[in-house]
Amino acid sequence: MATWVTGRIEENIHWTDELFSLRVRAPVEPYTAGQFTQLGLEIDGEIIGRPYSYVSAPQDALLEFCLVTVPEGPLTNRLVAMHPGDSLLVRPKPAGFFVLKEVPEGSDLWLLATGTAIGPFISILRTAEPWQRFENIVLAHAVRHAAELTYTDSIAALSRSHPGQLHYQPFVTRENHPGALRQRIPAALRDRSIERQLGLQLDAGHSQVMLCGNPGMVKDSCTVLGERGLQRNRRRAPGQVTTENYW
Ligand code: NAP
Image (cartoon, rainbow, N blue to C red; front, side, top):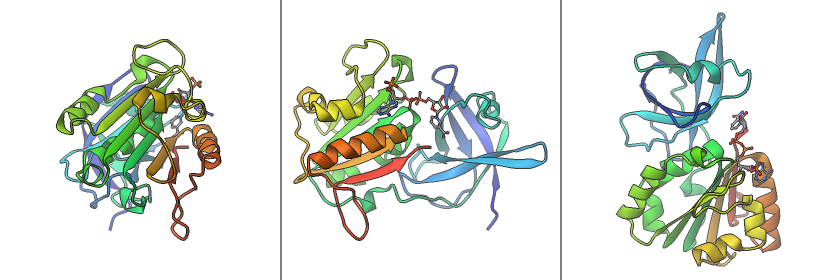
């Protein structure tokens, strides 16, 4: 199997100047929602590749990825400027274990993300499994500014398809935004404002939590959840908190 295959950009969705999603056609191997691959470009005779989670679901014809430009980043600053018809490299083999089959049973699933790390959760929610396994699904998305609240149309459509099952909670930390909490996720777990806002209780007995994004958010949330009796989920010692650091 080739290490890289060539993909064709079908769409470049610009959410803000720095935040964008690429829809790509490429002959990759089957993947599971929550997994990632690498996108790359040949720059000055060398392939520069970085990992990106699939936002698309395994059954989708196009592959989708959500990216943010990294200051001075050679790859993202080229990718943000790409247009339909342009080519990029994609690793055909998926990677990663941040998938629902690694998450033990529970009645409620809490998906907590910052920034572009909402991507793997959108992929998971585009499959049938979470809706069949969990009574309530919380999707919390923390961003600095309201314009960075990506995928709200997709989330609204998922809510309509699964009435009463999805509980979406935006967090906007650097400006006021209607319906959003203005605090960080670990703080909202600590003071339970997210539970009050949603009318749902988070506890070790019936909740499973997936954390994805800023490593500081993941670490601090694990600490707060640990104090509440929710343990890290490991293959040899199943728990309630499954994590993925995004960088
Ligand atoms: P971010 O700094 O991760 O902010 C997103 C949200 O997370 C904000 O609500 C922020 O709150 C919160 N947050 C930040 N640090 C936290 C912590 N320690 N604990 C809990 N919550 C925390 O920013 P972003 O806008 O998604 O991305 C910013 C930069 O991160 C990008 O420009 C890029 O350079 C880098 N990044 C790199 C990669 C990569 O793969 N290398 C991927 C994603 C992002 P506050 O407003 O309170 O800070």
